[in-house]
Image (cartoon, rainbow, N blue to C red; front, side, top):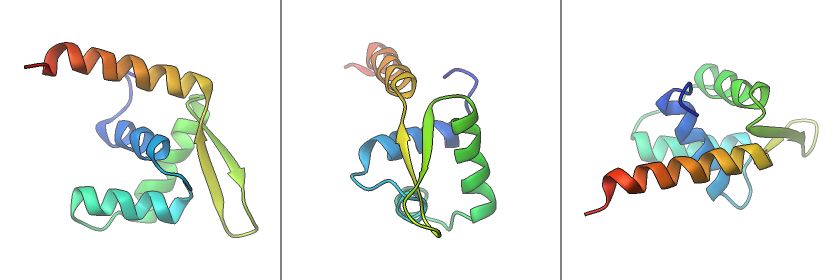
Length: 91
């Protein structure tokens, strides 16, 4: 997790939090958070990196739509990150 960019970590959070994590839904969530357009050239290469690292699994919903889910490793890494953050962010 330490070697991910902030954007890639945000992608993990969004994939984990959506009921229906497909590319367009992920893009819309990030655009709302970042308050600017997220281009496909940024989104999909970063999702592919997460797939390559074994944190996200990419599946095909139909010919035009891919869906993304956290792997077990991805969930463990995300939970460890949340625990680590909580140790510093607690008031």
